[in-house]
Amino acid sequence: MARIGLISDTHGLLRPEAVSFLRGCDHIVHGGDIGHAEILRQLSALAPVTAVRGNNDKGPWAERLAETELVQIGEVFVYALHDIAQLDIEPNAAGVHVVVSGHSHRPSAERRDGVLYVNPGSAGPRRFKLPISVGELVVAGRAVSARLVELVVTDDA
Image 1 (tube, helix red, strand yellow):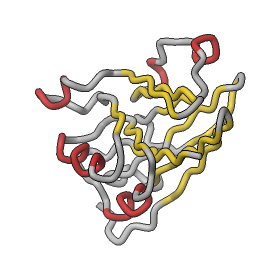
Image 2 (cartoon, one colour):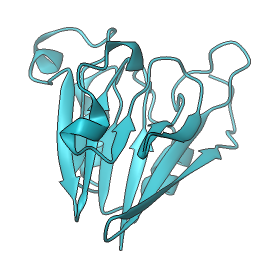
Image 3 (tube, helix red, strand yellow):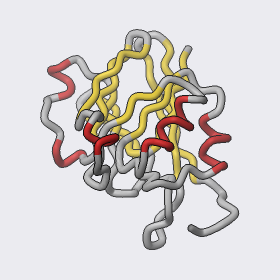
Image 4 (tube, helix red, strand yellow):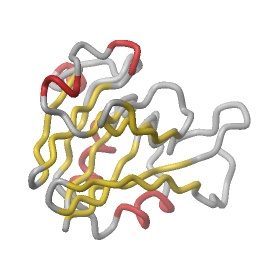
């Protein structure tokens, strides 16, 4: 069994509550709008990281990131991109089990046509009245489930 941490839209703010949640993960997927390379360095201290470039990720550090990534966790293929509206594959036909995205800042998890679509929401600065959230995938063989968690934060940055 593997626990995959999901985080997105940190926009330069890696909250201690998010770090606590991600501690102990086997892998972390960041859905973009990271903010700066230091966020990825800090996440990499917790577990291997797969990250995609978001529309707000600019500069030489961000140019090294792809807009999409495919990662295999055990028997499960996870496809990551920032904006689900830019999905450039047919996940089921491509053998993808999970699509992870960000961008909207709205946490969601739903299964469509056998594919699990997960947006962990935003773990960075609060936007409007949307929750500060992260997520996780639990992978056991070919079975995968998602859980979204609203973080209780001490400041409202």
